[in-house]
Amino acid sequence: MTVLPDSPLSLWLDTYGPYTPEPPLAGAVAVDVAVIGGGFTGLATACELRKADPSLNVALLEAKTVGYGASGRNGSFAMTVVGLGFGTTALIRGKKFLKKAHTYMEKAVDYLEEIIDNEQLDCQKIRPGFLRVATTPSYIKRLKHQVDLMQSLGFDGITWIEADEAKAMVNSERYLGGMWEPRLLLVDPAQLAREEKRLALKLGAKVYEETPVLSIATDAGDGKFHILTPSGALTAAKLVFATNGYSHLFPELQHKQIPAFTYMIATAPLTDEQLAPIGWAGNQGIEDARNLIHYYRLTPDKRIVMGGGPVGLTYANKLDADSDEKVFKHLEDHIAFLWPHLRGVEITHRWGGPFSVTLDLTPALGYAGDKRAVYSLGCIGHGVSMSHLNSCVLRDLILEKETELVETCPFVNRRMIAWPPEPLSSAAAHTLRGYLRAEDGFYERGLPKR
Ligand SMILES: Cc1cc2nc3c(=O)[nH]c(=O)nc-3n(C[C@H](O)[C@H](O)[C@H](O)COP(=O)(O)OP(=O)(O)OC[C@H]3O[C@@H](n4cnc5c(N)ncnc54)[C@H](O)[C@@H]3O)c2cc1C
View 1 (tube, helix red, strand yellow):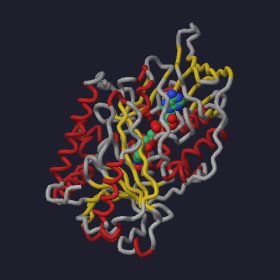
View 2 (view 1 turned 135 degrees about the vertical axis):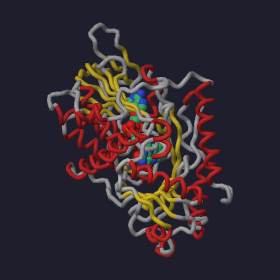
View 3 (view 1 turned 180 degrees about the vertical axis):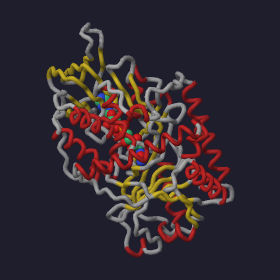
View 4 (view 1 turned 120 degrees about the vertical axis):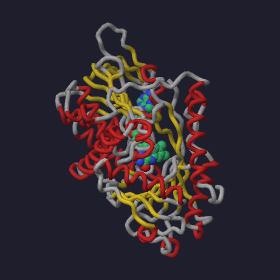
């Protein structure tokens, strides 16, 4: 199994403060359910399983420390968006699917808030609303079409706002209007992941950090999974793959997804003078209307965290692309594009990480083979809220319960198109990215090239 790389620390992980990991697995241990991966999906699934059946022995194995993956590095938006957004989801999978998916995602955002509030997870959660801004006349058309689409499906919470209203929230000369959706949480994702570890331990799950799974054998004749790690072996009756953008490392999931890389930067805390022309008193989470979106927010200590733009791909799904200087520069330029007075502002953090992409850009959960193992992957860049409701689906699948949630989740046990082997996989991924980039260029004709 590939060793996961050390990667530049996200703002969230870097500013977390002292952290003590749980000790690695040692010796031989047997449990009912093993969860591989200590991101939101794995941690939340361990919690849900213990809540549903406190007699179940549950152990979570994390290669590094919890929140090492996308969960500790993301933009912190817990939102309703699936895949590449409303328009693309309708185009690829149809309006009926979009309606089901959006209903599920609304529930996902609310469910995450419920867990944070009920369990008092200390993660700086706010619910400031989501603004998707149009920066060209073509994007105005695109967003108005999306608002009409969502309203035609019965989602009246999504509305169009004119430029002056958008600018009254967050002022940039580039904003020509936007799509407004109040249902958005912002969190500190590293704090959330580590609070979820605290909860998992409190509920009685075992958590082993710095414990990479090296291999999984099923041929011992006892119907169990024999999981090998550097200093211990775990036997489990059931298995949860919560490995997201790393899932291709496991033969069972090799062609279900590929990792693609998104990048972020954080400024130093802004001064009152720097912030005054922008406003942003409501701390709204913002994305633009591109395919290869920019996503950005203001942190409680008044930093701008900016992510997105160009997406990284690697040959043969290598995991060595957590940094990209060109994209970091692009993101700095994008801050100056929105707010020219911030050109040259100090950047304190630059990082990136893999997100999981299925060939049809749609999330997927289900049984990996027979009913003893389940997986969740393909959240694209939108898994913060989704991973938490997905954990309830994974719980029900593991417990083999045919619940309403499983029935209404549009991502479960669906027929998937496998990514082909190399070099076809790279060719397909580059073609898809090239198309998305070209379309963005078309929508942005007339804007200065960045
Ligand atoms: C830079 C960035 C920005 C993003 N921004 C947003 C956003 O603003 N909003 C949003 O909704 N989504 C965002 N996403 C996506 C979101 O973060 C993910 O969808 C979500 O965190 C997935 O959680 P997870 O638990 O499934 O996966 P991960 O958090 O990736 O966890 C997988 C874990 O598996 C572990 N693992 C892998 N292999 C092994 C092994 N062999 N043995 C043991 N452990 C292993 C890894 O170490 C990792 O910790 C972003 C992603 C990135 C990278």
